[in-house]
Image: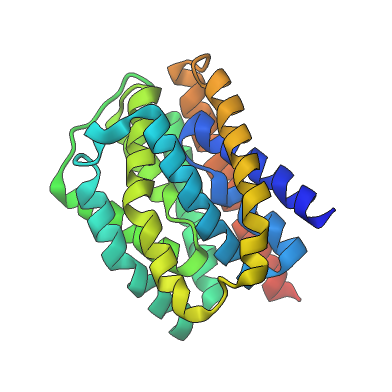
Length: 245
């Protein structure tokens, strides 16, 4: 029963990521944590999300976007150890709360932006966004939100934004596994969960791809920002509950 529940969770996460370009970790990490515990859930999410990222990348043939997101990915890799340092030496709950508030405000501002409004790219903003993504990946294991907000800010069709997100995750996903290996969390028990989970991910991507073509630019933008709202609200509520208790 445990492996079936995890498979269903993986299916939902892969479906959402295929649909809007991110969101796998949002579903998988907290729900699998209920079954396996938080540390194993993070390890499981990092390993399986790597498979999902590469499968989506090759399915979409997003090779031409690798160069476009290379600076974002490079600075995200630099930011990841910084995030881990914050996690180890600063107040983790305060960091999670501040990040959630920042995502909430950014998503709200982005939702108010007109869909046809576009901004030019710049090295400065790419560097800042990449660093923020890496820091978030190190502290809360979710590096996608800053990049999603940035991609919606500069504008583009849903296909372009999705492909850029797929390419971004292809760059950074192996780094998470490399940093995780010394922890010993990738063990035989985790490996046993992978075959059925990968099959579920493949199914979720297949179904998500069917609905992906039906999403207009306005609906795509709304779904992306709404998911970020969901992430931020859960993070804020969780932090407040920890402080109250």
